[in-house]
Each structure stands twice: as structure tokens, then as C-alpha cells.
Length: 436
Image 1 (cartoon, rainbow, N blue to C red):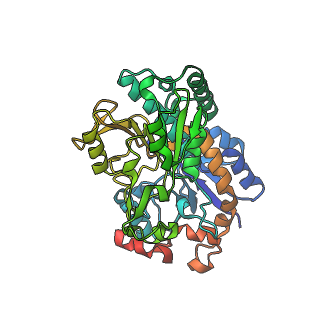
Image 2 (tube, helix red, strand yellow):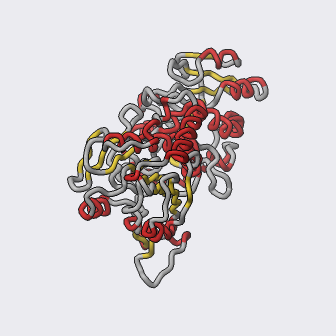
Image 3 (tube, rainbow, N blue to C red):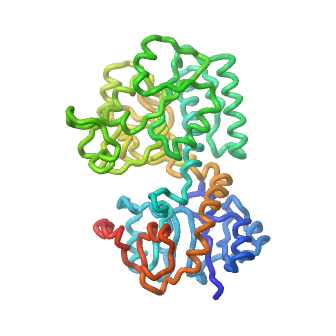
């Protein structure tokens, strides 16, 4: 029996140009696997309709005939059709209020929802993700934000020539320009008021690795979190170098009880027993890049009270920009009070007033919290994502969605990502009933 899948066009916002599968992979599915592929026409997708038609796909206006539909971002509730299988990033597992109507519709219409974020191997490692690209685009935008903030303050910096990620024709072009900025810093130096420029990375996973890949195009020296205070006190630093600090969990929190030592697994299992100690680093950082996974059960790393104390104590704190790539609103970075978009990417959080201003005006920290950063490098993101998704597509297309969940023939990895099966929450996600 010939299987049929559909690729939905993205319409969450005008910046979303990614595709879950690229044309060459669609050709492979059609010619080697015998799968019919229908692509919903899009004027915005990074790959034109004609690219998919050339590879044998049917370009259509609607996906009514497709029982299985792949997308990238959330799907509007009124688009959800009865008894279909949807695979996309649903952003529902934390009970995000904005997406509960969509989740309710999926349940009511007896649909199946497979979330890329939860597809994982036997060790829990994610198999389908955009993390690296989020880090790359987020670091570019963070460096841009820093340069613009310094320019607004009347301080010249080589970093002010960096643009937002989406304004480059490709990631390669962005890297070339940032490398040139690095050359300028290495040979001409930073302004005295910028020195030392400490850039901290919260987290060390794929997002952080992507961000560091961009940062490392600049001349840098890495120092440990515990050495920041002593290093800054010695004043043995250079205007021709930036300083990179990578923060792991043990650097960011401590047990509430002074009699206990930090244990990573205990922190994961019992986060209520820990508190943030990140405030001790804030006076030294010029840039903070947040790349770490967070849930509400964990302590916040940067609180509003930390920032208020810093701004009360110092007239001009060093901290200029927080690039919140993780972008949990009211989350690990408490001053991320809203998500931003590429056309309105930053706001200034004013700690003393607990208020925000759009743009770069105000006494406080510039917060970059774009919530769909991989879309800013849509071509590279789509290619990377399609490569990670391809090994799973055939299995999903061949699954028996008319049977019970355990007999569906879905792989264990995909079962882990199945939140709703034929309108009912799967065992691992029963807790989500409370969200509805």
C-alpha cells in the first residue's frame, strides 16, 4: 500500500521560512521508499514550490488528502483535521497556555500528536532538533545587540558592524564578517571602557556549542567561573581579547543546606533543594548568553532581585546584554518578560523600575529573546533538520495508526515523542490532562 505524507507550509509568523524536509530528501522518499509526498504551496518557504515539484512531489493548496502531516511550528487549532497524525514542535509539554486550545482540538478530533522535542534514543538523547542553529543565530543576534547598545551609549566598538542573523545571505557570510571583526579586535583592540569583555555561556549542550562556534570566531581566552573575580582583580587582561566563561550547573546553584555537596543527579531529581548563586558572577559579565534547558521546578538563575541589587549598588554595571536563546518567558532569566521577534528583537529591562522599553533606550540590560532563532538561518536550519528527521519518516509512514498504541509499529524513539495517540494522552504524558 502506497503511503502518503504532507508537508505543511509554515504560517506562525512571516519570519518562519523553514521546512521539515528538503527537496532532495523528498526525492529519496518518493523514488526509494515509494512514499507519495504532497507539499502545501508556500510563497515564503526557503525552498520554492518548484524545487519540490522538480523532485516529484505534488504541490497543493491543502493537505486534506494526507493522513500524516509534518510541520515545524505550532498549527492553528482551526486547521487541525479529524483523526490525522501531526508531527511538529507543539510547545505543550510544560502546559504553555497559548497552545492549550490547539492541544484540546487535537484530543477532541482524535488526532495523533508526535512532538520532535520528545523523540529520543534509549539514553534520552534527542534525535530531531534545531539546537545548534538556535545557538548560532542567537549568538549572532547577541553580538549585534551588544554592538548596537554600545553605539547607543556613545562607545565605538568593532562589534557594532555585526548585523542580525537574518540580514546575512547565508550563515557562511555571517561567519566571514564576524571573522573580520575578530581580526579588527586582534589588531586594533577594543575601547578601554569595554575591557575586560567577559562573555558568559549558561549551559554546555548543543545550543551552547552553536553559540560558541560563532563566538570563537573572535579572539578569546577561556577562563573558569571560579577564576573570574581573581582574574578581574589582577587586571591582567588585554584589550585585544575577549574572555569566555562556560557555566555548568555546579557553577550556578548550590544546595540549600551548607552540609551538603552539589550532586548533578540529585539536582536533576530534587531541584527544590538548591538555590541560585549566579548573582556573584553578574558584576563581571558584559554579555550573558543563556543556553540551558529549564523547567519551573528548577531555581531561576538570574532573578529580578539580583539585578535590582546590582543596579542599586553600581551606577553603570558592566552587564550590557543578555542573549536569552532558551527564551523561557518569566523563566530561568526572570527579566525575560516577553519573547521578541526578528523585527522587534530586543528590549531594555530596567531593574530599578521593574519595567521594559522596546529598543536600546533605558538604564538597564538589553534582552534579546527571539523565540524562533533558527528561522533566521532558514536554509542551514532546514538542511540540518531534514537530515536528522529522514531516518524516522519511513517508519512513521508505515505505522499502523488504526491499532492500539503498543501495536502501532512505531519505533521506541518515536513512541517517546507521541504525546497524544488517537485523541488520548499516552502513558508518559498523562500528566498533561491537568493542563486542559
